[in-house]
Amino acid sequence: MKEFKVLMVDDEEDFVKTLSERVSMRDLESDVAFDGETALDMLKGKDIPDVMVLDLKMPGIDGMEVLRRVRKAYPQVQVIILTGHGTEKDEEEAKRLGAFAYLQKPVDLEKLVQTMKAAYKKKIEDAMVAATFAEEGDFNTARSIMDKDKKK
Image (tube, rainbow, N blue to C red; front, side, top):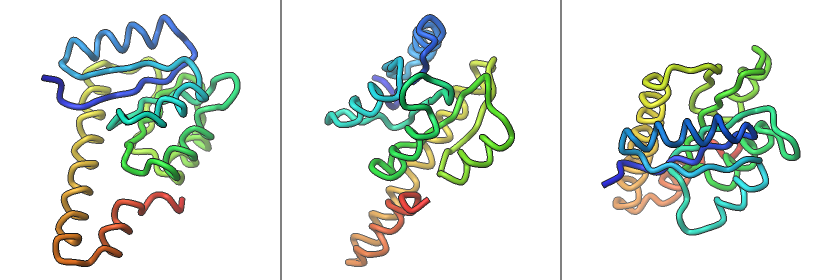
């Protein structure tokens, strides 16, 4: 059984396919998208990923805009930026927008997998805290916990 679902988004098709295969060998379910628009379309389905690994520099909708839209519409998806062309300014902006982590290519696969697991753990913890408030009838607090990064 797969632990959680990951969507990898990168316009370097060979790189992202290989990375997805290597992640899948570690018992993580992984899908790929080769551009931002496809990634956003994939989120509209009922099988929303738990974690997204997202490149910044892509043709069409770039990674920063994808991050912005994902955090607004799907705040439960934890986003990890994985880029080979990012700057300190990009890192600051990504974190301000709610990225869980910002990693540079080339990345050690174990470091990436551990970061994905940490992102998933945060998602579960947030959901558990929100559920506790909801069980007590405090739906506003529960909603604000789940939507806390939407406003970024």
